Structure formats: C-alpha cells, structure tokens
Image (cartoon, rainbow, N blue to C red; front, side, top):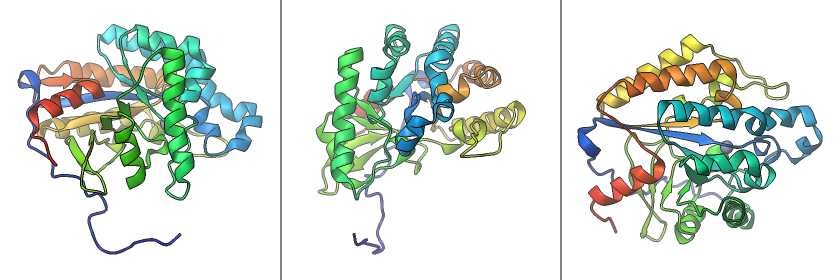
Length: 290
Ligand SMILES: [Zn+2]
C-alpha cells in the first residue's frame, strides 16, 4: 500500500453552513450511546473470545448497563441514539429490544466492531452489510445513522454508507456544528454530526488488566463536561456525547451522567435531540450542496 501524503484538506467536506436551532435554542445536545457489549473486546482482538473475564467488561451492558441507562433516560424524559453493532443485537436481543420499545433511535455501529481499515475494503463493507442485516432481523429497524466502531473512516467507506442509505455519520472531530460530507467524486455524502472526544466516557471511566488507564472521578469529569458544554452552548454548537453503558451504566458514573444531564435540562434554551432529529433539521435549514 502506498500513501498519498500530498498537502490537501484530508476531509474534503463542504463548508459548515450557519445553523439556527429549533424553537430559539442556542445549542443542541446529542446523547449518543455506543452499545458495544463484548464486541469492544473481541472485534479488534478476536483471541479475547476465550478470555471470559476480559469480555465480561462488555457483558455488563446486557446484564446491567442498558437497563440502567434506559431507566435514567425515562426519568429525565429525554431520547437518545443507541449505536448498536449487529453482533450485540444478535447476542443480546432481550436487552436491546427495550431500547426500541422506549422510543429511542437505533444507529449502526458495525457488525463486530472492527475498526474500518482502508487496506481491508471488503471487510469494511461486510461490516456494514452484516450490521444492517442483524439490526433488521432482531429489532426490525434500518438505521439512518452510523457511528464508526473505534471511530475511523475513509473515502470508500463514506461512499458505501451513502449508497446504503446512511444519512448521517457521527464520528469526526473536526467541527462543533453539523456539516455535509463531500465524497471523493464530488457528490454530497452523509451529514456529519461531529463528536467532542471530551464526552467519550471511555477516556475517563474504563480500565482493564490488559489496557490499563487512569480513572477519573465524578468531580473531575462533571466539571470538565459542564465547562465544555457551557462553552459549546455559548458558541451555539452541538454537544455530541459518546457514552457506553459498560462505563456510564456503572453506579457512580450513572449518577455523574444524571447530574450532567440535569444541568443541561435546567437550561431552557438547549435542544436535546437524537441524531436523526438533528439530521432532519440540518436537511431542512441548510441549502443543498452539490
Ligand atoms: Zn463502539
């Protein structure tokens, strides 16, 4: 494989259009969960399948995390987007069905959570096809939103997502407002609802024997999240969260998330919306770009 390292914008997306949020809101909050379950541990490291304790980090999703998160969303009366690898839906149908029943959006998160790799085009496309198949079979839904497993993407994959009916992606880190991707051939691609990596709970709350990371407590993370949210709110952006039930469904982190979302809800001028709602809004206010 040779690499084209010539100087050019490595994301050729269209310029970000000016944005006004519905009902006079100053900013938007997109509560996204990645329900990886065991795939976070076996997708990129298949030998972990024989390590029952290692994969039990992911098993927490189905045994405890998903139900607790649904409880919290219900209490706060907010809707979110749950990005599911197809494997998770097939392995844990009983844990996943209540997500749909509660009226949350289901997003596509690959099949086995393999990080998209441009050197393995066939595998990357297969992850998309099998993900759709599993979600349709188990939950009867065909998502319009996609968050890349392990947060990676490349031009051929963006084009394949567009062709497969994906209307928005939520993985890139290069803006605070939604924008539209431009495919390599110049055509319009999906809308991007960029994420803020400061809102990825894995960074602060996941550690394991084989991948040891420092853990951050409630006060540090809450103050980081509130400050980051307030500043994004001031700039009129979208606060996109990357949460995992195997992290934020743990007792202390559940309370931390609850405290944060209560802080957000206490403001009258924030639009809390799913990825699909933000995409529809973007499509209605932004002029077509071709
Ligand atoms: Zn994930």
